[in-house]
Structure formats: structure tokens, C-alpha cells
Amino acid sequence: MLRIGQGFDVHQFADKRPLIIGGIEIPYEKGLIGHSDADVLLHTIADAALGAIGEGDIGRHFPDTDMANKDLDSALLLEDVWRLVKQKGYDLVNVDCTIMAQKPKMAPYIEQMRERIAGLLEADKARVNVKATTTEKLGFVGRGEGIAAMAVLLIQKNN
Ligand SMILES: Nc1ccn([C@@H]2O[C@H](COP(=O)(O)O)[C@@H](O)[C@H]2O)c(=O)n1
Ligand SMILES: C[C@@]1(CO)OP(=O)(O)OP(=O)(O)OC[C@H]1O
Image 1 (cartoon, rainbow, N blue to C red):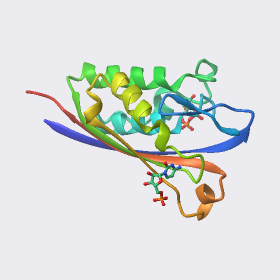
Image 2 (spheres, rainbow, N blue to C red; image 1 turned 180 degrees about the vertical axis):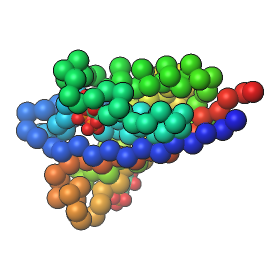
Image 3 (cartoon, protein in one colour; image 1 turned 90 degrees about the vertical axis):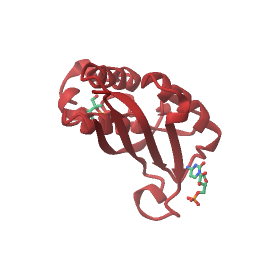
Image 4 (cartoon, protein in one colour; image 1 turned 60 degrees about the vertical axis):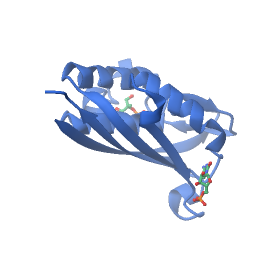
């Protein structure tokens, strides 16, 4: 049995915040804001995984009204979501992600992100692909107001 899910998330830039994407801290003059650590890529993957198992979205599982989720490490959030996926008997087939950011350059950090995500999803790195694109200076991403990410994720159960 195969199931597919997709995810999309956006977070806004602010000064004096670390920039954490894909579980990796990227040196930059600004970071993303959210109730959690605002890891836009891990949130997107978690939403895609929840979509694939028909379990809603991260806002339902980790409400931003709950102070227990304040400054939450999104790696823990994705680990929790992945536990649900595994409990239902599924493994990762592959996940493909796109980060939309005018700046900074993601290319130097992509391999580290793949390794981190593969670890969180208990899968080989070859099953994880991460891409980055600018939006050619158009829209909120192009103006450097924030970063968006999307993911498509496929899981498989062998029975
Ligand atoms: N934040 C980003 C954006 C893009 N890249 C890399 O540059 C390539 C070209 O970007 P375009 O927006 O012109 O498509 C893209 O394919 C990425 O490899 C990046 O590293 N970081
Ligand atoms: C992760 C949660 C919870 O800490 O907070 P945020 O960091 O604001 O992230 P978002 O992608 O808006 O949605 C899920 C939230 O409930």
C-alpha cells in the first residue's frame, strides 16, 4: 500500500533569531519567527507525513496556543510525527522538498539537511531530496520577508 502527502509552510524573517532550516543552523543576519523554532522545512515535511497518513496537520498535533510547544525544536516535532507514521506500519519511499528563499544561499547546507532529515525519517539519505530556489525577487520571498517550503512525501506499507 502506497500513500502520498504534500506540505507547504511559510515563516517570516526577524532580526536576532537563529536561522534553522532542515534541522541545520545556517549563518545569516536574520532568522525565522514562529511559536516554535520556525524550521519551515521540517514543518513542511511533518505536514506532508501527516497528510500521507490522513492525520490532519501540525497545528492540530502541536497547537500554537500550547506553551509546551513554545520554542519547540522542530526535529522533535518531526520525530513525533514520524513515530505515528511508523506505528501505522509505513516506511519512507522518498521525500522531495523545495525551499523558496531569495537569500541566503542554501546550496552549501543541502547535504547536511538531507542527512539530518534522513536520520529523523529513519531512512537512507538517497530517499531524501532537498532543492532551493529564489523567486527571482518577486513576492514576499523575493522581497526577503520570509521563506517558504514545500514537500511531497511517499510512504509504503508491506501488506
Ligand atoms: N536560496 C537559494 C536559492 C537558490 N539556490 C540555488 O541556486 C539555483 C538557482 O536559483 P534560481 O532561483 O535562479 O532557480 C538553485 O537551483 C539552487 O541550486 C540556493 O542555493 N539557495
Ligand atoms: C509548530 C507550531 C507549534 O509550535 O508553531 P509555529 O512555529 O508557529 O509553526 P506553524 O508552521 O505556524 O504551525 C504549527 C504550530 O502549531
